[in-house]
Length: 135
Image (cartoon, rainbow, N blue to C red; front, top):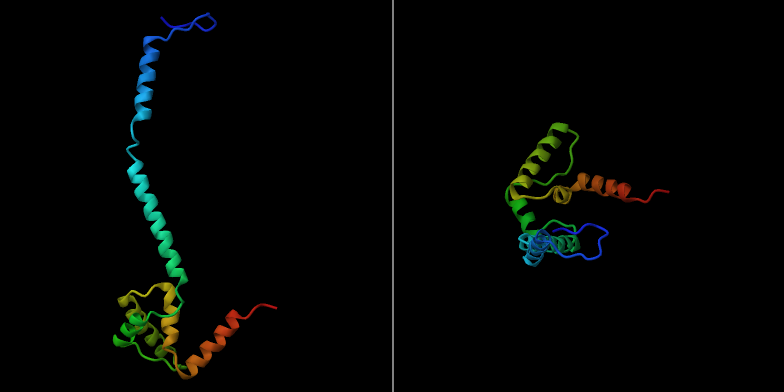
């Protein structure tokens, strides 16, 4: 018999006791997703450490990749007024960068590493202009 609100004594009902037992059983059972969540948290922490390590490294071409880049036929670039020549050099260099897996962020470093003569002078002047503080 269920209690009616406002009556003096409240004796638990069978349905109430059964519901309480089910609730306690659910509370006492381990969360089936706990292992998955712990694994995800470990992965997130590992990724954060990896990102910190990568960010701490100098922004320069990796020596091994630079050797591969040159070994696969990357050519120095001294500059040209012929747009076709410039485009062909760039396409060849990008093809090699793709092959050795150089990231988009590192490509400028690799490409400008191949600049010589007039191209290198142009790049140094351009870089100074791009990094110069605004007045």
